[in-house]
Amino acid sequence: MTEPTDLTPSGRLPVTIEEEMRSSYLAYAMSVIVSRALPDVRDGLKPVHRRILYAMRESGFTADKPYRKSARAVGDVMGKYHPHGDSSIYDAMVRMAQHWSMRVKLIDGQGNFGSVDGDSPAAMRYTEARLAKASSFLLDDIERDTVDFQPNYDESENEPKVLPAVFPNLLVNGAAGIAVGMATNIPTHNPGEVIDATLAMIANPAIELDELMQIIPGPDFPTGGIIMGRSGIRRAYETGRGSIPVRARAEIEEIRKDRQAIIITEIPYQVNKATLQEKIADLVRSKEIEGISDIRDESDRSGMRVVIELKRDATPDVVLNQLYRFTQLQTSFSANMLALDDGKPRTMGLKDILEAFLRFREEVILRRARFDLNKARDRGHLLVGLVLAVANIDEVIALIRAAPDAATARESLMAREWDASEVVPLLELIHDEGNVIIDGKVRLTEAQARGILELRLQRLTGLEREKIQGELGEVAQKIGELLAIIESRPRRMEVMREELLAARAEVATPRVTEISDALGDQTDESLIEPGQMVVTITRDGFIKRTPLEVFRSQNRG
Image 1 (spheres, helix red, strand yellow):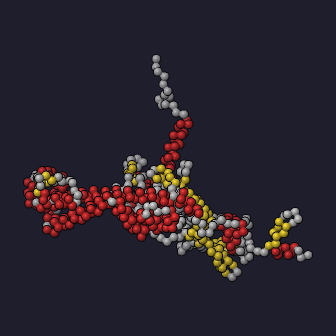
Image 2 (tube, rainbow, N blue to C red):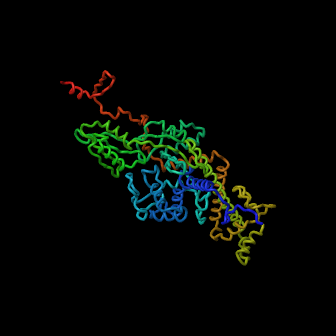
Image 3 (tube, rainbow, N blue to C red):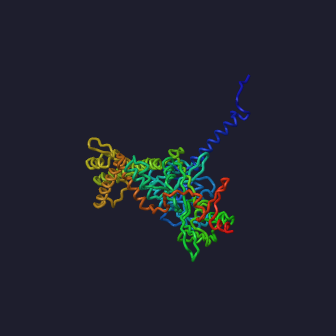
């Protein structure tokens, strides 16, 4: 008699549809959150942007090299690291090359990369690109074990989990993305102000938010504009969420006799200029806004200029306030500063983001110092062997000449015990523990023996021997500096400060978004033509407002 089993005919355990849907959906949600839609607080990049920058660097498409076809870079990214459609990769690359999307461009593009009017970029076979200079501050030292790597989708390559960014790119270039059940929308900021705030946190880790906001008063959008009020900024920086009203920069000019125009030179971030003009035209046709006679776009290479020509009897301030109310000449940027912190989504304020970056950057400096220390010690170890060989050159040459082959020569050099008087102070100088000294004698290691066999005859001259000693002194000095970085946190913070100042000199630019203390809310009064009115109250308590001229004409008889 067989025992009962819960297996299905196919040999699988039965699973309820609720359990399957729950587990599958959670797996999908976490994949979107971690691997696609949200940026990492450390380098401010999503996986696709990180892969583009890394692949372009690996292919040599750096700022000091000629432009290369965008299709080639997209192909490298898709084939090695990002197994998705080429259009999504190219769209991400294009955005990093648009000066109206990024506060600091990470891609230097050549060709048609779209426009602020929403025009599509040219196909990737027509455009060319290379890394912008600012990208070097995100990628430098990646080969020096500064960050962890992981296998790519087919485990044929390794890709970085994060880039060793020198400055807080998340705040500088912001981010926008929609995940499953959550979304992020981080505004761009002025790079000089962000770096200054980071330096202030290095100097005083307990700095208060009010002090940081004196350095970073608010977002700095690449398209300029005017932020109306500071309360939304304060809430965003304190809690990670806040609504920030942004208004276009507009001036009223007299373009010819008795005719005035509203001149728009800056628009809110992420507003499509062409769509904005279409909306204004629709409002004029539907007579929701009166007083506008013509709209034309006079933008050129020197900057944006949209002319809204007014009728003779129009009041410019009233028309402008109506435009602020009914069009995207005034919008609200809904800040939601959500990013991955230690692999988990977290809503962070300004200080939280800077603290997370500082922790990461200190770890990068520490890992780089350990990597360089190992390299320096390996080099110092070889130089000690060369010093020992030069000091006993006749015996070394005799051993090598007597050996039938290189392997035997190497074993003979390692088997011989050499006088350690020449190398003891050198070993102490470079903190080398590779050679063991017993009874004043020392044996060469295999690495040192190989180095001696590869020694060129010209290095046996007196001048070359001095060079070996000089290089050993430089290595010893470098080892001392690296040990100081590893053992002293203040020294690590000083290194971080120096690198931030170097980045600031390259990426800092003047602020383009103005912050006004005036509120952006429009009252009904600001939308009404000014004029004298007569207010009458009937016996039944009804109130009526009548223009003075109309009232007089009605009561003349």
